[in-house]
Length: 370
Figure: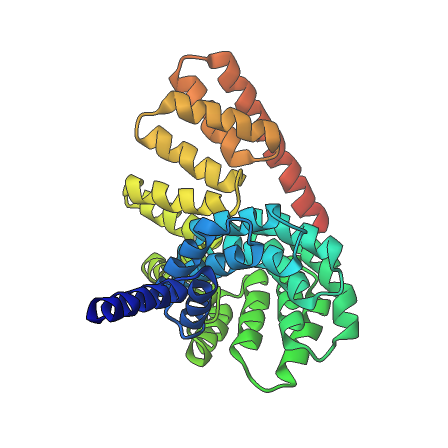
């Protein structure tokens, strides 16, 4: 009788343990861990559940979110993409995929997803603003202006829209409209965003000291504002204070490793110090944000020249001038390489192009003077 009782108890405990480990119990515990911020246990639970239910798009999306919360964006992206393949194009999962690309610095991929998502949900303001920010990070200011102008007319009191649109307008030299955006932001009181836009206007006007003053106030108001140190670094760089510029770019990259301008400009300064390895790393990060950017590719070509990789530099420069025939510096560098390689006819051709472009530039500058 005692043996029978022990056997029944053992069976009961085994059944109880099995119930605790049922898929429903596992996923419930995973969700609870996720909500409590215990992402590692959530990840373990989601993966355990998916081992027996691989077609659950929602749980796979949850796994992606937990992975993203721990900074494992590539793994999160893989889960989101798989979740989207398993069912309808769920807008929430689709947005999470775009955000994972965005937060990992894969801006071109984020832009691609957000562009398609915006076409499917043109009234979704979060999608629109994220897409605008992606275009802004890639230097596509006209696209930002086109995207946000209709939205700004309907939401004139929204400072986020005013800030993004104002930045694009000022960078696009539309100073009057840009000033209108600054004024709208200032209605809510002084802010780092307003000071950053004011500094951008001063920088465009080549008033470097005034720009530095505005950017430094922006830093005091909010040192974590995206791009604030990047713009301050550019102003210091343009004013000739290279040490301060390098410090600014490093501060921006410490909080935003994928900032394009900071990576590009820091690479230029590192190259001047003959720190070619770190300069190349900065340029690789810049190209991750803006693939094929000619300014970054040009800097890589100049590093290749400095490190003896002349054939690589020549090939790179030849591709650059095909895409941008007016890129004077690229023609100058290419002419120098041709002469070094005893290709006088090619060098003479490039030098003639440089002389022609410089003459055209001087004519335009003379015509623009009163």
